[in-house]
Length: 111
Image (cartoon, rainbow, N blue to C red; front, side):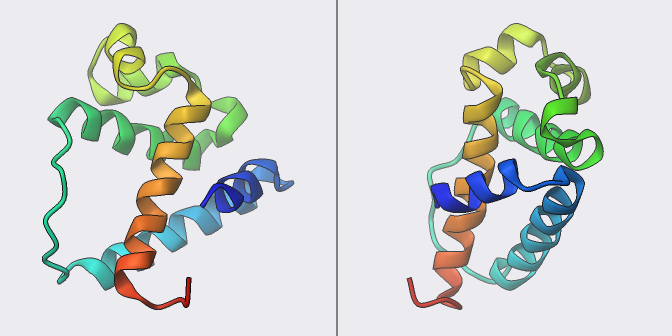
């Protein structure tokens, strides 16, 4: 799972990687929409931050996205963003991990 995040993060141009990341995320959401597994629920603020971060990473790329931009898009304070995610790298990793969990649940790939 770390490999996907590293590949997406280090691929040049980053815009192409982020576009693929977005397409993968959308495909997985569609495939897992009917999956009824119980998961630990995230707090609404954690979800808002992760969704805002995903949007900003897709729009501005990893290096063009700041924690300030994410906080503004999530309608939370910068302190709240840091309370949920210690840094931008871990926020990006959490998003990639969530996508990979969805992939594993669909059993589309033999992992």
